[in-house]
Length: 460
Ligand SMILES: Nc1ncnc2c1ncn2[C@@H]1O[C@H](COP(=O)(O)OP(=O)(O)O)[C@@H](O)[C@H]1O
Ligand SMILES: [Mg+2]
Image 1 (cartoon, protein in one colour):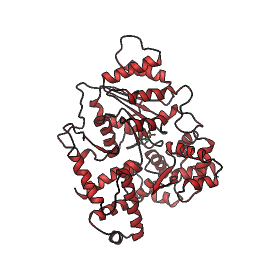
Image 2: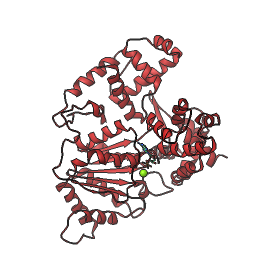
Image 3: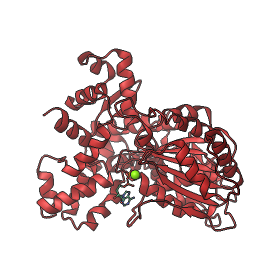
Image 4: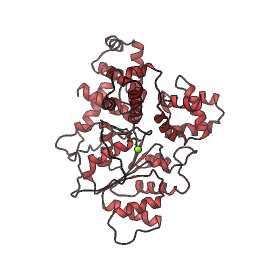
C-alpha cells in the first residue's frame, strides 16, 4: 500500500466525517507519519512549529478514531490502514461491489480502485432506461466530485440503499451532482425520474405526476393510499431512480428546521414506506434542511443514508479559470474563504471581474469575505426560514472570535436549556453552524461567509 493510497483512504474517511478534504498540512503530517518521522522532524522539514504540527496530528487521530470506531494514534495509524485495505480489497466481488464496501456507512475507495474487469454498472438492466428529467437544468461544466459520486454509486448500486438524503447549503452543488450521478448509473435502471419540488406540490400532485410516467391501463387513482401502493408496486416491478430536488420547499418557514408545512405531512409517511417496504428502487432527496424522519429511519434501517455535500475543494479552481481571473497563487485562499461553494465562488468571481479587473489578489487585500449582493440574496432565502430564537443564537455565535461550547451561549442568551438545544439542533440540520468534537466536548462556530452575512444583516 503506497503513500498515495493511504492518503486517499484517509481523505475519504475524513471527508465523510467533516465534508472537507485533507488540507496540505494534514497530508504532510500523515506522509511524515507513514515515513516514520517524529512530529519535530515533520515540523522542521516543512517550516512549522512542532506544537502546531502536534495539534494537527492529534486532531487527525481523533477524527479518524471517531470515524473508524477504534483508537487511532500516530503509532498504530499505518498498521490500522494496512489492515483496512487488505480486508476490503479481498472482498470485492465479481460485480465490482465490495461485500463490505463501507466502514460505518462510508465508502472508502474511489472508482479507480475497482478492478477493470468489474464494470461500473454491475446490475445492468437489458433495456434502455426511460429517462424523464422534467425541468432539470442542463449542466454545462462539471468538475471533480469523484469521491462523492463513488460513494453515492456504491450506496445505490452495491448496497441497494432505498432512501438517500443529499444535504447541503444552497449552491454547494446538489442538483448538479445528482444530475451527473444519473449519467454514471443510468444503465442500471429501468426508469429515471427527476422532479424539483420548488413549487411545493402536494403529495397527491407529486404521485399523480409520477404514476403517469408508468404504462397504466386504468385511470390514476385519486386516493393517496392507493396512489402510494400503486407506486410501490412499480418500484418493485422496475428498478427506478427517483430524484426529488428542493425538498426544503415542503418545510415551514419560521419554524425549526425540517417541519412540514400544514397539508404536507403525508410526505413523511411516503418516505417511511419507501424506506421500509421491500423494492428495488431508490429515492434521492436533495435538501437544504435535513428532514426529521430521515434521522429516525436511518437509525432503524440499513437502507436509509444521509450524505452531506461539502466543499468542491481545489477543483473549484476550474471555475475561476473559466472566468479568466488572475493571481492563481491566491486562488486556494479564495476557495477556502468561500467554503468551496461553487455558486458563492461564481458570484464572487463576477464581482472580482467587474470591480477588481479579475485580480483575486487585489480582491483579497480588502477585508474578505466580501458578500456580493446576489450572494446575500441567496443567503436571504435560507435565513428567511429561521425562527427568532435561531436568529438570536446565530447572531450570538457571529460575535465570537473562537468556537464556543453550549454553556457559553446559554450564559449570554435568554433561552432555557431545552430551547437552546432545540435551536442548535435545528441550525445544525440547516447546516448553518459547524460543530467540532474535541474529546467529550462539542465546539460550535460559523464559517466566515455565514458570519459575515449575519453581521451584515443583523448586527449593523
Ligand atoms: N461539480 C461542479 N462543477 C462545476 N460547477 C458546479 C459543480 N457543482 C455545482 N456547480 C455550479 O454551482 C452552481 C450551484 O450548483 P447547484 O447544483 O445548483 O447547487 P445546489 O443544488 O446545491 O443549490 C451551479 O451554477 C453549478 O453549475
Ligand atoms: Mg439545487
